[in-house]
Image (cartoon, rainbow, N blue to C red):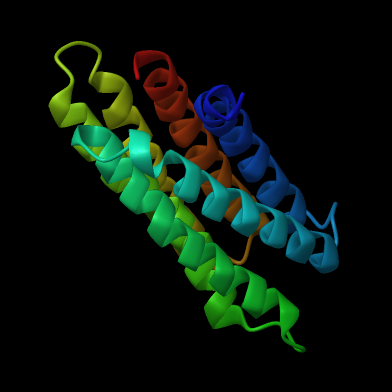
Length: 169
């Protein structure tokens, strides 16, 4: 059962996470709810890394295991950043930009290893990088629309890549 959950968890959790982050930026969910979500994700990521290590020691799966391990730390930065009063924007930025960019590393590695259909990982990488860039410049444009657009690009790119990876591996 745990193996099946590890296989099906990422294609469910990735779009759910980005939908949640976007909802938080639209102030549909509170900062406290976002804190709880970070705690839950940190527990899930650490659990995933611990239980998946034996199956993820070689090839592209090793790359993804390393990204999950680093992502656990990135998520914990978000937990601490949201726990502090007032919220620490540097730590929450580490969590947000970390998860925007970490999967791009995995998509590049996966894309160079596959023989067919590697374009989907280029799409995933582009979504991560363009979305992060759009989000980063959004304050200079003075509009929340650009920030939300960046989050949507990241979410769509990562969802496309993780769905293919889950099917392929």
